[in-house]
Image (cartoon, rainbow, N blue to C red; front, side, top):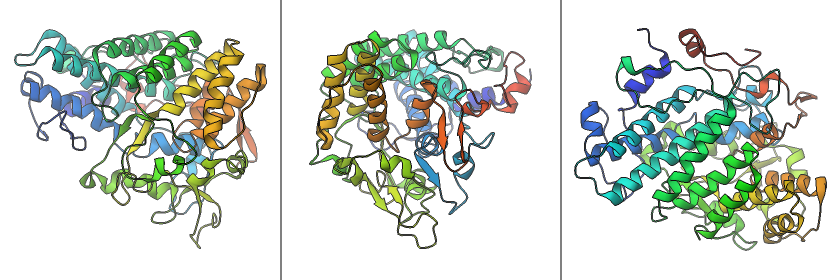
Length: 469
């Protein structure tokens, strides 16, 4: 059988295990080469396989750069200054200049599948409590990877774009170890992919506690991610339930005016973090420092500065302006322009940063938007003002479209340079204002979606490429 590259990765890389930064929770030695039986049939091996899924999130194609920087470059938040040549194509929305994470996503989905199947079948020496933790984290991570795949390669249930929609992404729920187990499925409907994510996260929340928050999957993060998934899925009542559950877990402390900037610049986890990746010094080379390099001219290149349009969206009294600093690169055409300072050695090591993937303020804004779209005006204003007043701004009392638009604008200001803007524009079907192009990128433009890799198309006859590629 001729194997698709992604499934070759699944077989080869599933057991090429890396390590996440230090934790007593999963106390196993790094494993770089191990047979399937050794990896999956012992508590240490299954823990190491699970750590491999976390490790996948740390790559440059994922949250060490692309999933943070690309949504700013592709959208109206960032402007590429061409200091190193990076992010220019994405900022100009060139065809094909997009996310390239398909292989990694399905490699890690396969790893999660193997963990889920093995724990459910039973492992000698694995306690019930430890088995529940591992199973819960694997379900959380499978949902997380499917969510990234679905929003990059397909349209969201809130914006399906009839005539352009060739489906979401393949649903693979069985682990692959040998070639005869390989499946070549078609792209599933978005509704089915989102239903699977919801089921995984709801189950994860029943299995996990918050003992390992925020650096590993936990119950609060499961509910928080569930609120995000349901927001993209358009199930607004479920958003409210999930967000309320996440907030009620008590993980994360809301940032206030006095500590907002320090929350991003002081060493240690962001106080609001529900889920955060942490990097060790020896993991930094060629990986996480790319965020500092991409966003800051000192010590990096400052490849992507804040657009004038983004900076103009802030009130002068807004404490969040303190997360931007003026570029001091005299060779840059962005000299004197504003750079994001959210990644400046946040974990205490120069040029290496924790990456906060899910935090409390987003959950409040998820719930605010859901309330607004359901007509719960008072509740929506309460959640919106919970954020506004903690950023030095006056409370508002809005309704209808004005309320929804203000919540979306607040998301832009609050979550700037954290990897949300492109996906928020995409899920709401909003044209993208691109001054660098002197034009809009319409919501129905084929460049909104990333291309599925050609290797996948050539080997899997059931996969249909995104229109325009």
